Length: 119
Image (cartoon, rainbow, N blue to C red):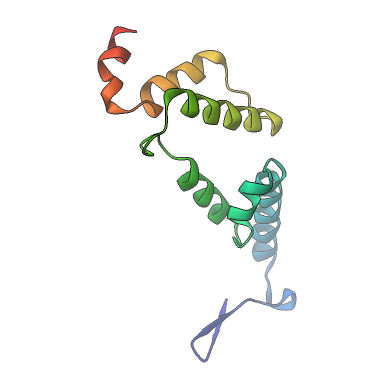
């Protein structure tokens, strides 16, 4: 990025070094992988993002936790299953044991702690 009159201006292709081009290529590939697994609702959330990292952060915030008021365990599990299915379609397979561990240790609210310990 160059600064002109206090405004960021992207480099032109002629100004890019070999390292810049490699970074650009990696970002483009990562964006492609992230976007290919999204439905129309998800895509509308990330369409203004310019980097793969920005897309990832936006999706992470959109799907983080279950502290959303009124979300039932059934709703949470449906959302979780949808996410793991999308990951599977992108080549990231999460074994059943891994899914159970994620739900028990990361997804369920604190109010379920005694049940988690019992399990």
